[in-house]
Amino acid sequence: MGGLKTNRVLFLGNSITFHGPSAAVDWSGNWGMAASAADKDYVHLLVRSLSEMTGSTPEVLIENIADFERQYDVYDVGDKLRRHLEFKADLVIVAIGENVPALASEDAQTTFKNRFVKLLTALKRSSRPAIVVRSCFGSDETKDRIMKEACAEVGGIFVDIGPLSKNELNYARSERTFTHAGVAAHPGDRGMKAIAEAILYAIGSQRPAFN
Image (cartoon, rainbow, N blue to C red; front, side, top):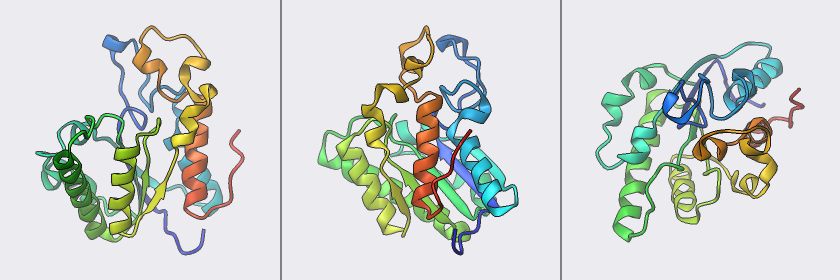
């Protein structure tokens, strides 16, 4: 993996990254929705593979920042993510976008980009980590373009996982039955595996064989 350090890895995402139990949507997991078990979500798969490849288990911090997605225009990065900035990560995985309201106007697009750049810049300044930004699961041309542009501004690595959503087998609903359609529309075990592989491949590692 070249000179990439992975002693401390920070994951900032939404429910795909982490979601605690919720009776409201009939979800009992305490990991990335909607993998069948904790060790099947993309976070745990990626960390396991990094551990195997480096011979050392990273210290990991995981946070659901769906509030940033929904309220990016007023989200206080310095306050809300103080603990995460102080974590001093070597590698940051940012996996958001799905909950961002439709960016229908030019003003909305500009605001989202500015706020996303501010988020990534704060992360970059905290410890000069390698930053990986993942596109939406389910292509959104506008959101993905803006996130890719913001990622480029801070010298990050952009990973396009949009094509994964075109394969029904990558959805949790293809693997088992859910009572809530929103949960069912999340990536299942196969989709999570594909996301982990895409991120690992993008940061310059050999494509792993997840078991």
